Length: 450
Image 1 (cartoon, rainbow, N blue to C red):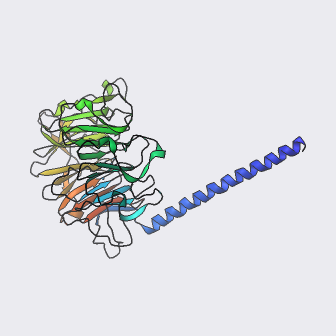
Image 2 (image 1 turned 120 degrees about the horizontal axis):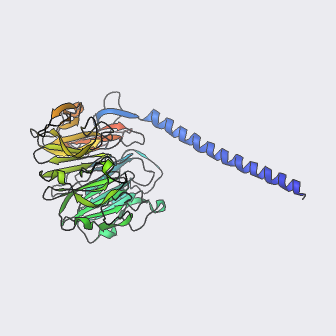
Image 3 (image 1 turned 135 degrees about the vertical axis):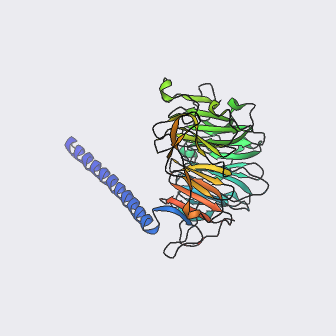
């Protein structure tokens, strides 16, 4: 065949290939558009206030729904009297009933629901069969992965594993899991508490030792010695050697640990000084220079802290008397420093007239607290307040969540785009975005999580 005919044939073939590729792309685009339209027509895109999961209104589809923050997580300390629990990830939610059964709803693109596939989102809470007859006592949800802890102290993980956050000894998207899988690196430990972050995970054993796995780009695992290396097996956090850790909270790029004496330790980047180590950004040579080891937060030395929460760009600490301290940036309107960042942990709210039992934050910014009487409070308009030091700051005011004012709430899980509350009767209330069915709005009434 002459050269010019050969060239013409190659050109025709190239055109055919391009046309085929364009046709395939068009099919994908149309499929995505159809899915989006069906989701918008079949579910509320946004729920502005908490709505009952089991008492839908006359013009409202039945609901059952199930917060780190960004990244969201809900770590539960198991006890002899097993209680229901809820947890939220970026676009998925988990619920745990008192019999140790786990339910999941929302996005399942990476297998984070643990339902044996990664193809279909769920619009209602679905039993997680991959956990079999195991008695689960705690659940945690990261951005796109999930953790479950059984009554024997064994940990199971599913979902996204790009950075090794499942702790299964490998990493990369090809190692994602679609079923909850036993974490063998902790099989000789009795785990009592778990936490799932954006792309990392933490576990505390019965001796108070902390183990970490996953993304460590910003030093948030606290491994020390300029260590930015990711982990794909749970590794003991040696920078807390000798401390008995009772709680851990992690966010995008920093983590907070709490020991049994009420002392707080922080690891990760400085950023807006969200860890409250008293080291403002301008004093650092490099903006992203992290604290590679968990470092004592000296600005809280005179306080006995009982709970901590690491948020997107700030942190909260709850003192045993009910006082709340905050550190970090106010990009989204908090933690109370109206005109700038709080370099040190600073008193921003005094709730000593209430017995606060839990703190968290939703929508990247809004602090949420729960008291012992089951009342849920959210931060509202700031008011000027003069501290004992004479400094005047924007003080956080907490007001009851009106939609739940007559409910006795026992747990709250608040995330970047959706939040959940669980009452004493096992009913779940939800608010926020419902892009992937994470609120659990479905076509049937689901049973309460009891």
